[in-house]
Length: 450
Image (tube, rainbow, N blue to C red; front, side, top):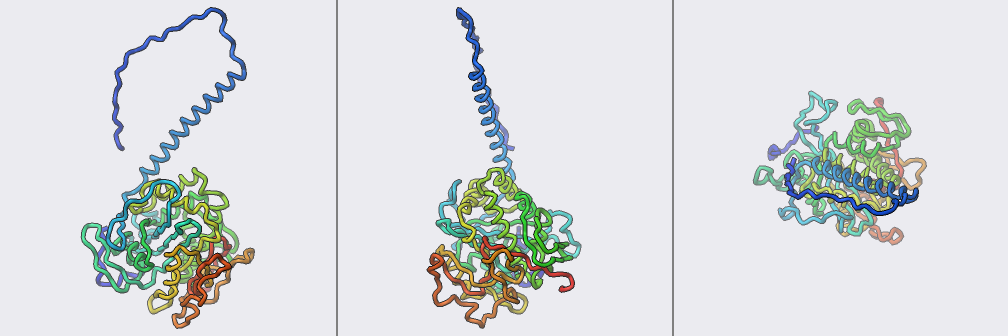
């Protein structure tokens, strides 16, 4: 991983007992009252009803106990939260309780490359295990009326300004005018990455979660695996990912390595990895929707536990009801209204930089809760699935960064909304990605091409 180059960077600092109250009571003698005559023999129907009633009572009580244990188990798994602050430096508070979240949601998901405490399979003697870079940074935006959602992926090597961030040990870190986005996590932790993305997008971010390798593995396993399409063989010695062309159901370690592979997809760049991850995410959402996962308490519990045990959450996310409330907002969003996009960027020496006009069009639409319409390619890490006529084939080299000198790629069309698409904002072609209803395949890359 690239080292942090700025000399301004400082290292980030980074059973309850049950009371036993006894009650005093007098023993009460139960008397038996004898009645004249024979007792009536209970009928088979009456006996059957009693058995049913007893069984139902036991089931309800047992179910309540199991539910209580499950809730306690999840709550006990939650790690201490990270305090987030808004753009004014104020703590994020006063968040609603359980139920479909009453309004819009901005949730930041950060994937850390830290090997600290991870499976031995990820320990490389040549890699600093104490490093903590945000190699994956995604912002999930759900509109206030819950009619549409957008997941924006930010390139790790994109040069951005990093604002002054709170130091967990007190005080604050200095701001920096130009650093790669993936240094923000090691600089000031999850709160710093949230502030950086908030400044970059103009959106307040009240929820954030940091996940490491083990967390991704646990989440994919809780889903029972995700079936992805591979157009060409994927061969990557770095992540030990070797997949033939066709469909593969991935979970645990294999799912994680598929998401991590860079050398084995597209042109081998981090941008290709983003579009490859979008193949996985769209397949996952299709699977979640078809299996009605968001209405299945058992699966939701497994996912909540996996998240609580394996993620570092912001204070605002550490309550179980908040996690479920956010999940419930996606329950009724149509797949065609869930978009996975890449932050518009252009290639520069040593990385990429934002395309400001295109980014402004994207985040103005999200800020106004307007649906978006993509005109750009899916990216060089993905191709259209032949069985899906709605998917857009990526242009050659589309993932290598747009040409900032090309007005057509960087600015929205003159008519920025499409009445035929329900007033969706038409985005410039430099905003690449796909919708969750599109079936796409990973564009593999063999060792011979590396």
